[in-house]
Image (cartoon, rainbow, N blue to C red; front, side):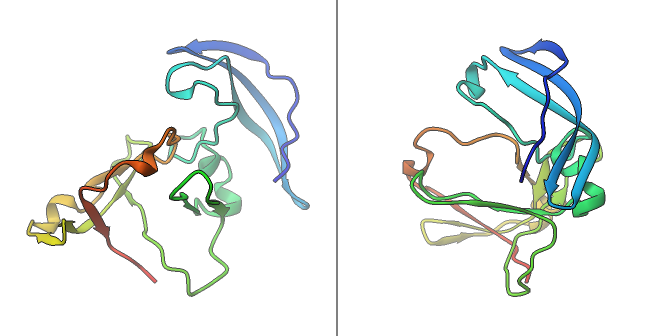
Length: 169
Protein backbone atom coordinates (compact mmCIF):
# COMPACT_ATOMS: atom_id res chain seq x y z
CA UNK A 1 0.00 0.00 0.00
CA UNK A 2 1.46 3.35 -1.01
CA UNK A 3 0.33 6.50 0.72
CA UNK A 4 1.06 9.75 -1.09
CA UNK A 5 0.99 12.22 1.78
CA UNK A 6 1.82 15.92 1.74
CA UNK A 7 2.23 18.25 4.69
CA UNK A 8 -0.53 18.10 7.30
CA UNK A 9 -2.58 21.27 7.59
CA UNK A 10 -4.10 21.80 11.03
CA UNK A 11 -2.75 21.09 14.52
CA UNK A 12 -5.01 20.13 17.43
CA UNK A 13 -4.29 18.59 20.84
CA UNK A 14 -6.47 15.93 22.44
CA UNK A 15 -5.60 14.07 25.64
CA UNK A 16 -1.81 14.15 25.46
CA UNK A 17 -1.81 13.41 21.72
CA UNK A 18 -0.93 16.16 19.24
CA UNK A 19 -2.76 15.63 15.96
CA UNK A 20 -2.39 17.15 12.53
CA UNK A 21 -5.28 16.89 10.09
CA UNK A 22 -4.91 16.77 6.30
CA UNK A 23 -7.16 16.02 3.36
CA UNK A 24 -5.21 14.50 0.49
CA UNK A 25 -5.39 12.03 -2.37
CA UNK A 26 -3.95 8.57 -1.76
CA UNK A 27 -2.99 5.66 -3.98
CA UNK A 28 -3.65 2.23 -2.44
CA UNK A 29 -2.75 -0.05 -5.34
CA UNK A 30 -1.66 0.53 -8.92
CA UNK A 31 -5.15 1.51 -10.11
CA UNK A 32 -6.88 2.54 -6.87
CA UNK A 33 -6.88 6.25 -6.03
CA UNK A 34 -8.97 8.01 -3.38
CA UNK A 35 -9.46 11.77 -3.48
CA UNK A 36 -10.23 13.83 -0.36
CA UNK A 37 -8.97 11.18 2.08
CA UNK A 38 -8.85 12.52 5.65
CA UNK A 39 -5.57 11.84 7.47
CA UNK A 40 -4.98 12.43 11.14
CA UNK A 41 -1.27 12.39 11.94
CA UNK A 42 0.01 12.07 15.52
CA UNK A 43 3.19 13.71 16.81
CA UNK A 44 4.94 13.57 20.19
CA UNK A 45 2.35 11.11 21.46
CA UNK A 46 2.27 10.09 25.14
CA UNK A 47 0.30 7.68 27.29
CA UNK A 48 -1.18 4.70 25.45
CA UNK A 49 0.17 5.96 22.12
CA UNK A 50 3.67 6.83 23.38
CA UNK A 51 6.19 6.16 20.63
CA UNK A 52 3.56 5.41 18.00
CA UNK A 53 4.36 6.86 14.62
CA UNK A 54 1.19 5.97 12.76
CA UNK A 55 -2.32 4.70 13.44
CA UNK A 56 -4.73 3.08 11.01
CA UNK A 57 -8.33 3.41 12.20
CA UNK A 58 -10.35 0.23 11.64
CA UNK A 59 -13.43 1.23 13.64
CA UNK A 60 -16.88 2.15 12.40
CA UNK A 61 -16.37 5.91 12.73
CA UNK A 62 -16.71 8.04 9.57
CA UNK A 63 -13.02 8.97 9.54
CA UNK A 64 -11.70 5.40 9.86
CA UNK A 65 -9.86 3.77 6.97
CA UNK A 66 -12.64 1.17 6.75
CA UNK A 67 -15.37 3.79 6.31
CA UNK A 68 -13.36 6.01 3.97
CA UNK A 69 -12.64 3.05 1.65
CA UNK A 70 -16.11 1.44 1.90
CA UNK A 71 -16.83 1.93 -1.83
CA UNK A 72 -13.70 -0.08 -2.68
CA UNK A 73 -13.51 -2.75 0.04
CA UNK A 74 -17.20 -2.91 1.10
CA UNK A 75 -16.27 -2.34 4.79
CA UNK A 76 -14.55 -5.73 4.77
CA UNK A 77 -11.19 -6.45 6.35
CA UNK A 78 -9.49 -9.25 8.22
CA UNK A 79 -6.49 -9.37 10.46
CA UNK A 80 -4.58 -11.83 12.58
CA UNK A 81 -2.79 -10.68 15.71
CA UNK A 82 0.43 -12.63 16.27
CA UNK A 83 0.83 -14.52 19.54
CA UNK A 84 4.26 -13.01 20.13
CA UNK A 85 6.29 -10.05 18.89
CA UNK A 86 8.54 -12.34 16.85
CA UNK A 87 5.58 -13.76 14.90
CA UNK A 88 4.04 -12.15 11.83
CA UNK A 89 0.45 -10.97 11.68
CA UNK A 90 -1.47 -9.72 8.69
CA UNK A 91 -4.08 -7.17 7.66
CA UNK A 92 -6.15 -7.60 4.48
CA UNK A 93 -8.81 -5.34 3.00
CA UNK A 94 -11.66 -6.65 0.86
CA UNK A 95 -13.20 -10.10 0.58
CA UNK A 96 -11.04 -13.16 1.25
CA UNK A 97 -9.65 -14.83 -1.87
CA UNK A 98 -9.69 -18.26 -0.25
CA UNK A 99 -13.12 -19.80 0.30
CA UNK A 100 -11.59 -22.19 2.87
CA UNK A 101 -10.75 -19.36 5.26
CA UNK A 102 -12.45 -19.63 8.67
CA UNK A 103 -13.28 -16.39 10.39
CA UNK A 104 -15.25 -14.86 13.20
CA UNK A 105 -17.64 -12.17 12.02
CA UNK A 106 -17.87 -9.00 14.09
CA UNK A 107 -21.37 -7.86 14.98
CA UNK A 108 -22.81 -4.38 15.36
CA UNK A 109 -23.18 -3.00 18.88
CA UNK A 110 -25.23 0.09 18.04
CA UNK A 111 -25.33 2.86 15.50
CA UNK A 112 -23.71 5.15 18.07
CA UNK A 113 -20.57 3.04 18.61
CA UNK A 114 -17.42 2.94 16.50
CA UNK A 115 -16.56 -0.41 18.10
CA UNK A 116 -17.44 -3.86 16.83
CA UNK A 117 -19.02 -6.63 18.86
CA UNK A 118 -18.52 -10.36 19.13
CA UNK A 119 -21.32 -12.84 19.76
CA UNK A 120 -20.09 -15.29 22.41
CA UNK A 121 -21.54 -18.79 22.14
CA UNK A 122 -19.41 -20.57 24.76
CA UNK A 123 -17.19 -19.91 27.77
CA UNK A 124 -14.61 -22.42 28.94
CA UNK A 125 -12.52 -21.89 32.09
CA UNK A 126 -9.83 -24.42 32.89
CA UNK A 127 -11.47 -26.99 30.62
CA UNK A 128 -14.88 -26.60 32.26
CA UNK A 129 -17.78 -25.37 30.12
CA UNK A 130 -19.60 -22.56 31.93
CA UNK A 131 -23.38 -22.55 31.36
CA UNK A 132 -24.97 -19.23 30.46
CA UNK A 133 -27.77 -17.80 28.35
CA UNK A 134 -26.25 -17.14 24.93
CA UNK A 135 -28.73 -14.29 24.39
CA UNK A 136 -26.83 -12.31 27.06
CA UNK A 137 -23.77 -12.13 24.81
CA UNK A 138 -25.48 -11.85 21.41
CA UNK A 139 -25.72 -8.71 19.28
CA UNK A 140 -22.29 -7.51 20.30
CA UNK A 141 -22.21 -8.90 23.82
CA UNK A 142 -18.43 -8.54 23.87
CA UNK A 143 -16.87 -5.32 22.61
CA UNK A 144 -13.91 -5.42 20.21
CA UNK A 145 -11.67 -2.37 20.01
CA UNK A 146 -10.03 -2.83 16.61
CA UNK A 147 -8.18 0.46 16.91
CA UNK A 148 -6.07 0.09 20.04
CA UNK A 149 -2.63 -1.40 19.72
CA UNK A 150 -1.54 -4.13 22.10
CA UNK A 151 1.81 -3.18 23.56
CA UNK A 152 4.10 -4.78 26.10
CA UNK A 153 4.30 -8.44 26.99
CA UNK A 154 0.59 -9.19 26.64
CA UNK A 155 1.36 -12.59 25.11
CA UNK A 156 3.09 -13.69 28.33
CA UNK A 157 0.06 -13.13 30.56
CA UNK A 158 -1.42 -16.40 31.84
CA UNK A 159 -4.60 -17.43 30.06
CA UNK A 160 -7.16 -17.89 32.81
CA UNK A 161 -10.22 -18.15 30.61
CA UNK A 162 -10.76 -18.72 26.92
CA UNK A 163 -13.76 -17.36 25.09
CA UNK A 164 -15.00 -19.43 22.18
CA UNK A 165 -16.57 -17.24 19.47
CA UNK A 166 -18.88 -18.56 16.79
CA UNK A 167 -17.05 -19.56 13.62
CA UNK A 168 -18.32 -19.11 10.10
CA UNK A 169 -16.94 -20.78 7.02
